[in-house]
Length: 113
Length: 114
Image (cartoon, rainbow over all chains, first blue to last red; front, side):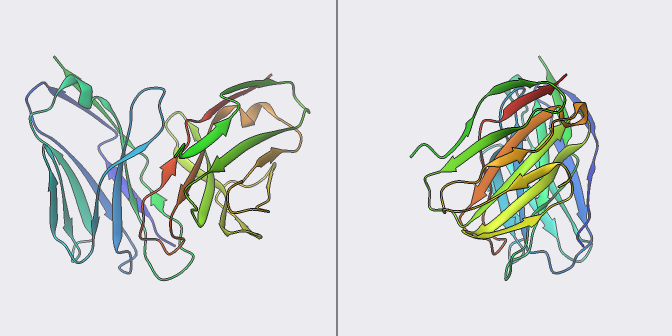
C-alpha cells in the first residue's frame, strides 16, 4: 500500500519568514495530493491540493509543488503570520477505484511574532 | 449546507460501556470515514464506506463497528469501551470514493474512557 512520510514533525519560524513542509510517497500511481490545516482544537480543513498533471499551484501566500519523478511534494508558506500556526497534514491518493487517502503524520508549525 | 455534523462533541464513558458516535452529511457525498487522532499519531483510519450498504475496515478497526444504511449517515459504535479508546474522533466525507476529491471533516468528538 501507499506510505507517506512527512518532515519535519515540528517547524518553528519567525513571523515573516518562509516555511516549507515536505512529503514523500511510495506509490507511483498516486495522483492527488491535498494539504490540510488543523488549528488547535479544530477540525482539519483543506487549504490547497494538487493533481499529478500539474507541477505547481499557488494560492496567495501558500503554494504546493510536486515532483513526480522523485515522488515528493511540498507545501510552501511565504510571509508567515501567527495565524499560520497549526498542524499541517499532507495526503496522497489515487483515482479510479475505492481508494482511501494516506496521511502523513503531521507538522506542527509555530510562528513566533 | 451544514456540511458534516458530528454528535456529541464531548463524551465520558466508563470502561465496558457502549455508545454510538453520530455522523451525518448533507452534501450527498459518496465516501464517508471515521478517524481517530491521538497525540503524535496523526489521523488513523478506523472504518470507511464507499456508499450506502458498503463498509470496510481501516487501519485500526478493532473495538468499533459501523453501518451505512443511508447516504447521509455513518454512525460509529463502540462495543465495550476501553481506556485505549480515549481519543478525538473525526468523521470525514468526500464527493467521490474515486480518490480525487478532498475530505470534509466534522468538528470532532472528544471521548474519554475512565
